[in-house]
Length: 443
Image 1 (tube, one colour):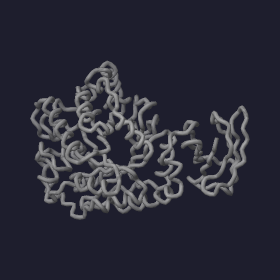
Image 2: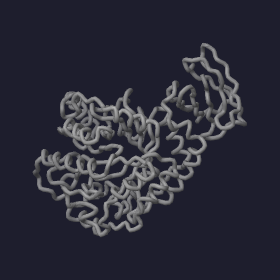
Image 3: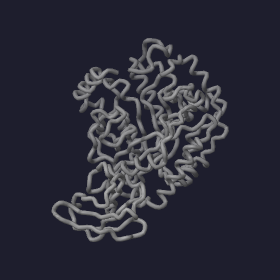
Image 4: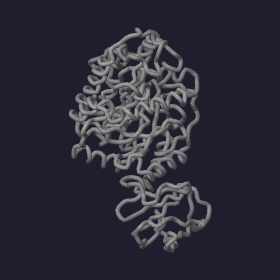
């Protein structure tokens, strides 16, 4: 998409913004919903799972190709429909997945129920294009995962793609999944909306209480009437406590319960996704990130980020008040990549020791800086010094007089001096450790 085209679409959005098409009219979250928002902000750390029949192709041998392979390789529907025949994840064990998640210190899971290819990873009754009906596996992985999550106290969210390259009534076509699919050049948009609504009803009524719905794909055709008022109202009528978020890369619409940022910290746009996305001052925030460069499984993608890099991103996200949703793309046999598990276990050791400075916190009184971030809980401010080489640092005042400053972990006192210029902290080099130079300021 060209810059000019994107600008034109965003201008169009400006005039549509307050219409029924883009918001849940007069939405007032329920008390249960507000409690769940607090839970969401307290628990801070989730596992994103991109898993579907596209895993069989393992990226097709190209870096950067995974769950988008149907579109990127322009595979017609008639050919793509052969993939389910080879999807037989006999090593899938929901209890093992959830046990690993819990050990890693992860508090919730968001998993793809239907991605852009239109294939349902659950037992949908309104579609034949499902894991139960079209694969030799014939099991509802979402049901098994939900049962395992319930046993271990892990919340489960469902990712749902509004975009669908398979459904004939996803018409007119958007910017993706166009001429190559073999679909007729016609369709009834309202029928597709009804189909989407029916699948969402299944997800919200057949799996008990869920954490919420994670939408994606509205960006495929911003100018379309997505009936968000109707869809969001329907979701909240079925489960008032369910949290709705949408990866549309825009400021939140009324009816959404949290705001998400794709592969960038709130307010940043290094990936080019978050143009025009104002940071909500009232909703919970979440950023999602990959462990390599792919969401779904890609056999050639060895660009694994280090545990230190991912931990720093998590810490910085917490400094913005945002959750960290870290992705894995399971293999077609149903196992999670060993490299991903190894990384999560290293991160869990850090969280075992320093998790208090992340879980249950909100963004601190000092806005994120290149040198680090602050988080806070009750009368404690946790200062994460991530990139500062000098022995002393002057930070802004916290707005309240500081009673003490200590190094987190061993309670070593840290020299400090308050003045009208701020707080001067002196941290001896002998006390410095990468990612572990955390000061506790009590007031």
